[in-house]
Image 1 (cartoon, one colour):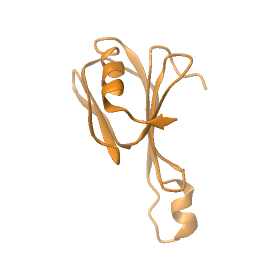
Image 2 (cartoon, helix red, strand yellow; image 1 turned 120 degrees about the vertical axis):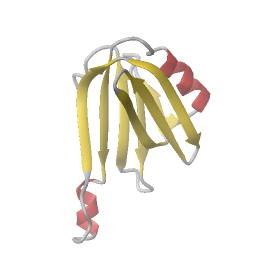
Image 3 (tube, helix red, strand yellow; image 1 turned 180 degrees about the horizontal axis):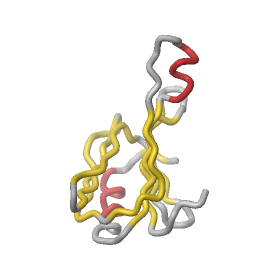
Length: 117
C-alpha cells in the first residue's frame, strides 16, 4: 500500500459517484487490544458486499489521518483514520489505517463487483 494522496483518491472516488458499488467497511482494535490489557474494551464493525449508490464522495484530513465520506440517498457512510491506499488489479479502491505496529484498524474498500476474497 502507498500513503494516501488526497487529490488522487478524490479523483478516483468521483469515478464511483452515481454508480452502484459494493463496499467493504471494517473497524477493529482486534484481539490485540485485550491481549495487551485484559481490561481493554474490544470493539469492531464489519460490513461486506453491501451495495450502495452515492451522490457525493469527499476525502478530508491530512497525512496523519484522512476521512472519506460517501453521501447516499439516506445518509452518509464514512471511515476515519485512513492513511494508506491501493488500487488493485480489479480496479478496486482499498483504503486502510494501521496502528504504529502495522495492525489494521480501519478499512474502506469500493468495487464495481462483489468482493470474493
